[in-house]
Image (cartoon, rainbow, N blue to C red):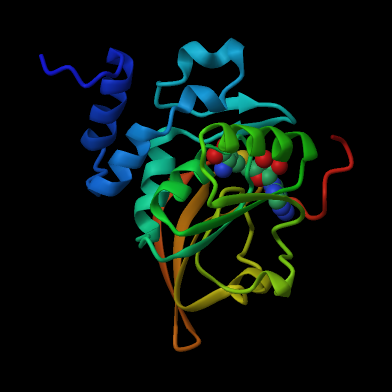
Length: 216
Ligand code: SAH
């Protein structure tokens, strides 16, 4: 057997991503490089390498690894890209994005989650990602435009305020559908002011809510 330096559960993790159709080598490498167990509370750490979503503080969830890989692949990231993520949560998806893009801004409405994620990302020496406390449904125009936007909380429709932050030729991926139920992962491409839409797969995400959370 080839020794990759990874524990067996991590090798199974990689194999299951490939088997489920993730084929972009850069995405697979990023998934291999980012230790998912560092983004999960101690009690759930034994399940870190399973292909399932897990609870994180503030009633939120860290997405299932397959969905993280799939959404990342759909963004078609290039090393020059500037990326916006709605919903930092654990910080795991932001870490994957940071491996593949020039600069990542991730916005979270819970202070506890934002602070924890920031510390984790710094601990992994991912210095091209900035964690901001705020409402990503309404990103301030002075944040500029982004080549790619990843929405990791369910929206009933993609808000115009996010479309406005997407550069020409840019791609946005979002779970669109009812807040409590099944959503469709949708990919939008902004081409000459026309928005092309492609429906991908069914997913389940926690809802995107307006405003900064009043609880911690
Ligand atoms: N990408 C995360 C998982 C996100 S779960 C990870 O890799 O772990 C969705 C997150 O979006 C939650 O943490 C939730 O608090 C946050 N969220 C929901 N609405 C938001 C908003 N309007 N602005 C910023 N964050 C939001």
